[in-house]
Amino acid sequence: MARFLTHHTVILSVALALAGCGSGDNGNFDVAFMESPGNLFATGVRLSEGGQHVLGATRSGLVTLDQYGEVVPALADRWNVTENGSIFVFRLRDGTWPNGEELTAESVRVALNRAIRGLRGTSLGLDMAPVDEVRAMAGRVIEIRLASPMPDLLQLLAQPELGLTNGTGETGPMVLLRNEGSAVLSLRPPLERGLPEMTDWRDDTRDIHVHAYDAADAIDRFDNGELEVVLGGRLASLPLADTGPLSRGTVRLDPAIGLFGLQVVRASGLLANAETRAAIAMAIDRPALASAFNVGGWTPTTRLVTPDLPDESGLVSERWTDMEMAERRSVARGRIAAARGAGSPAVLTLAIGTSPGQQLLFEELRRQLGSIGVTLERAESADRADLLLVDRVARYASARWFLNQFNCQLGRGLCSEQADLLAGRALDERDDARRSALLAQAEQALMAANVYIPLGPPLRWSLVRGNVDGFAANIWAFHPLPDMAVIPR
Image (cartoon, rainbow, N blue to C red):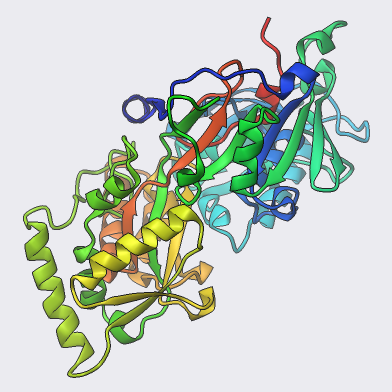
């Protein structure tokens, strides 16, 4: 994991100008997410990225993530791992649930099992499949037993959707007060956060005023000095950001890992067989896509799984590396011509938004696919599309996360039962090398089925003033709001 983080955690700065004065001068610290209020303050387990941030501030799990993306204590103040990564033992901090009941091992066991059950039917539920049993031990100790070693369990337990509650209130470090499309988040007293009592703790904290705006509005408000931080930037909104030397803030890019590509959702017409689907993937010039957006540090890939993860087996490599682009397109053109038949149009529809970045991506893809005789059109709706744009940040650095996104149980589009079978066998494998090999075989099965056309990693960016503490770019593109509420001494 250390090698992976060293390679990927370089902070990419698009603009280096320091910020001017902002809304903090008036006593407020304002943070905006580029999404709708309905998504930002939603409940449940299918949350937007902004919704995950708000839930992470108001509800605690056993552990949580800090501004650097590292796992730190939450309801558990320490832990250790035994049996070669098959047993995780957590010591709970002193404290109570919101209704005053003691935070005991048994009550936390019940809450954790409830949270895990609530994830059924989601990709996070599949991620938690190795959890075999949660045990309440003596005092404030709970034990999680796994069917097979899972080095990423802590990272999973830190996800906001695995925050714990006994049904009587929230357990997080912050209290949320809603006001229509915005909210105020205030830190709880130190004792309620598992910290030593301090009489002057308010002197070193600030409330976070949280807003939800569309991208253009959020950027304008930042430029006008109304906001300290804007979160939730994607490739779709990047062209709206002022990245010139006179910008009042800094565009910060996260070295995120995850999925950014096209998922095949209908196996009909040109996409009826794997060979023709491979032709579409083969014809895309991914470095040209990166050049169109002029973003340094974005590394295109033809693989489904991000290369160089900790459980990398070395058995899967980039595709078509022995072919020049002209040769690839010649082969693809021949396959498309054979698939469509005499006089039949070669048309594909893509479900994609109309924001500046998405429009730029669509036009570039349409130009490239046109070179092999395919006409790319916008789908009228997602349920009528042939292809769907996938833009998703990984929750943990393992091939399992990537494979689970295409599990047939989720019904997201084309899938591979063979890949699911191999990934399932990997869950039962206790030998690291054999488990990595099975995950690699599952990736190969999905790539052979060509159910997904990878383009590269997801792009995530934020606007952050130069005087803001508590923010750091990280591979999860997750920026905890409680960290920004602490004023450095």
